[in-house]
Structure formats: structure tokens, C-alpha cells
Image (cartoon, rainbow, N blue to C red; front, top):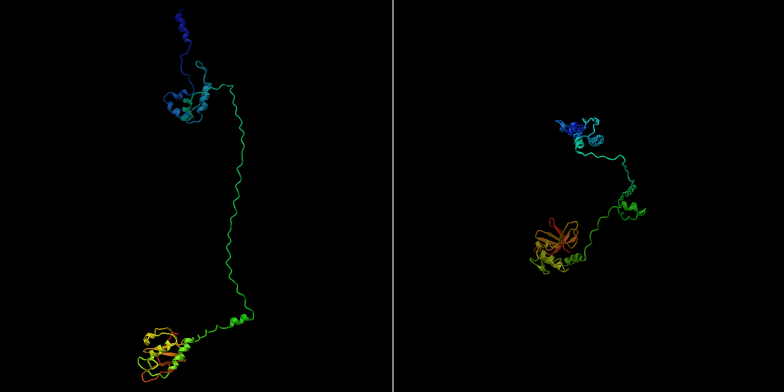
Length: 267
């Protein structure tokens, strides 16, 4: 046998170099490769199958048959991870150890108790001063006694003096416009008498109407003015008055003849 024939025979004993065939080869080649990759990649088994395939794959040149794996149920994400993730070989004698970590649990502190609610008490109303009780014998009498009517005011010293001075000029003749004891008209007479006790009155009867405070007939007292339209005199009490009335008539004291007289308190 020639050397050429021996060389050809020796070469014929070796298989041509090719990519090893695995259970996933049908998924990454052919018209259904893309759809199969999407199906396998969607499953969480991609890493497990990739590691299993890498461990079970025979060395190059070996003709050992690989186990068949059902990958029809894998998602596209799982299949993509199996194809693109490199295989990792770990020696069988590798050991793993985990250090123990001492951990101490500290319980959370108990919450502080909430303060008791403060209830504000309403302040008691201030007590008014208590009145001393009346004696037992005096209490019924005080309750039964009617309220006393207010006493009539006593005439003042000037009011009494006015009446006394007014009576001194009884009999003085009437003189129109007279303001002296030689002769008086009505307003001249009242002006002169009040001046003797230090009270100044206006000259005419119309002005003397507003010289003091008007009082009712029941409240009138001696020394008040008695006024009517065109006439004025001095009240002496009990419905009497002194006034200068008309020409030819001397000054005298008599009952009030004025209809609806106005009583004016000046003193």
C-alpha cells in the first residue's frame, strides 16, 4: 500500500469537526428557532437546563448519545437564557461553608402610658353675701307692714321767708308798672318779694313763667309762684295766694281764681 493510500485511510478514521448536537439544537436552528427561543426563555428553568446540558455534554469527538429533554413547556425568556448563558463547570470536590453570624434581637421599648385626661371642674359661682336673718318676732311684722308713703317735703327757710315777706305788703295799692311798696303790678310785686331773699326774677309775668320748675298742684307748696295767662302771684298754701290784681284794688290774699293755674318752684 502506498503512502498516499495509507494517509487517506488514516484520515478516513476521523469524523469531520462539527458542532455538538444537544437537545436544544433543534430550538436554535430551523424555521421554528425564534418561536422556540421565546417559549423556552419565558420559563424559570433556563439556568437549570443549561447547567444540566453543559454537564451532560460529551467531550468533542465523543459519540455518546445525549439524553432527550422536553423543552416544549419552557418560556421564551428561559430558552433565551439557556442559549445565551455560558455553561459553568464546578469540580465535584468543591466544598461550601457559611460563617455563622451572631445576631441579637433587642425588643422594642414599651410605649409610655398616655397621660390621664385632665377634667376641668366648673368653678362654683361666687356666693353673694348672706343677709342676717331677721328676728322671728320682727319678721312677720316687717312683711305685713305696708310701705310708708313718702313724706311731703318741708318748706325751706327761704320759702317760709317769701310767704312772710309777701304778707307784709297786703293793702299796697295796685299801680300799673309798679315795682315798689308805693305801688305794684302783679309781676312787679313778685319780683320785689323774691329779691328780698336773694332770688332774681324777670320783670314780666310771661318771663317768670319759665323762671323755675313746674310742679303739680299736689306737689305745690307755700312760696311757689302761681301763674296764669297775664297774671302771677305767690302761693301761700291751702289753695290761697297773694297777688296785685287790678287798678283800684289793693293787694290782698284770697283763693286762687285762675283756671288751670301753673305752679312754678323757684326757691
